[in-house]
Every structure is written in C-alpha cells, then in structure tokens.
Length: 266
Image 1 (cartoon, helix red, strand yellow):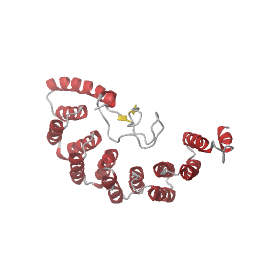
Image 2 (tube, one colour):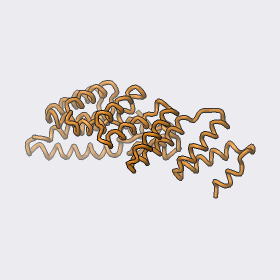
Image 3 (spheres, rainbow, N blue to C red):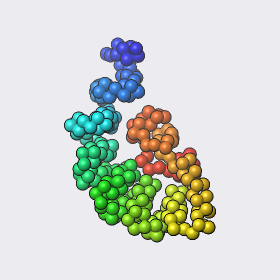
Image 4 (cartoon, helix red, strand yellow):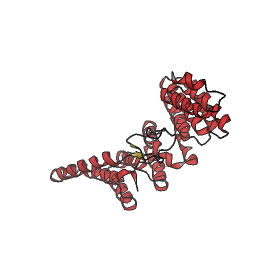
C-alpha cells in the first residue's frame, strides 16, 4: 500500500514529499484523524502553518458527527477548529447548524450572524439557513430586515434569492417585484430577472401568463448553466459549493458567491 511505502521514508531527505503524498492519501480516503496528525507533522517539518487545513479536517469530523446527532463530538471538534483558526467560517456555519438541529433557533441565528465579522462574503452560504429559521420562529418580518441589510452591504445571488422568498411570503408579489426591480437597477442578474418574472406571474392575466412562463423558462435554463461557484485557484466551476476544490484539491479556494458570467469571469 502507498501509505506504507511513504511512511518508510520518515527521517530521510524525501520525508517532506512523502508526507505531502500521505496527506493527499488521507484526504482522498477521508481519514481525517490521520490527516490531522500528518499535517501537524508537516507544520513542524516545513516550519510553516497549516492551521486552515487542520481546522477544515476538524470541521469534516464535526460534519460527520452532526449527521449522527453526536452533539458532544460536534461541539468538541468545532472548539478545536476554532482553536486552530478563529476565522473559520465553516466552523461558524456548523456551530449554527448544531444549535438549529437541537431546536435552539435563536442561538443558531446568533451563531450565523458572527460570519459577518469573519468574512461577510460567506453570509451567502447562510442565506437559506437564515430564511428557513426565521420561518420556523415565525419572525419572517425580522428575517426580511436582516437579509435586506446583508444584501445592501454584501450583495449575492443567494442572499437575494432568500430575501425574495421571504418578502413574497410576508408582503406579497408586488413588494417582491419592487424589491427585485430595485436590485436589478443596482446589480442586473439573471436570477433577479427570474424572480421578477415569478412575482409578475402571480395574478397575471391568462393571456400574459404564457409569455411570462416562456421567458422564465429560458432564463431558468441560463441560470442553471451560468449560476456556478468558481475556484479562485484553478478556475474549476461547480453547481455546489466545495470547501476543498475537486480540481486543484486546495482548501477554501472557492468564492462563496456564485457568478453568472461565462467561464466564471466578471
């Protein structure tokens, strides 16, 4: 096995490259405890920090424990992740998920709000979480105010989409259409156009509905093709967000904001 061969190179001039290969093996096999141990050795050997990678490994373990509802392990892994990297937005997202899964909705919202002080661009990844949690709490109006503030300061397709759905539910199609028109004037996007058409379809006369549905269908096709996340390192594009790029295999290289521009270039 490759792991055994690389381990035999410990203490030799090839130890650094062997350790790098070992870390790659452990990441591929999702053996996060071994990845943590090997990366900590790499820190000592290379005399450079790998705190972001180690924090991500602990987040992986926290994610697995959350699926098992092993809340004590989740909390312990997240505490270790934060000890490694206080600015770890993934750990903050998971901290909110931990509270939400236990029914502590107010604490979940408070956790996700901390993302603004870490890296506000990552609020886009929490947009649906904010919207869903305010629905469950029965505080949609408050959710609209919070998301409006975030969208005004840190505009993103995902924040706009979550805000639109809450406004549509709470204030109706006219208010939702007005919101999107204002956003389109400031930042034209296909998603904004799609949501405007959705609002206009509600209550539209029968003779207009057919044309609106046709245009909405065409816009929707382009959104699926263009509304992607993009790795800032290698340019790999994907429909879902990855903490580790499947292309270059680096951590935290994906922008949390989806782009609609062809090939990911603005």
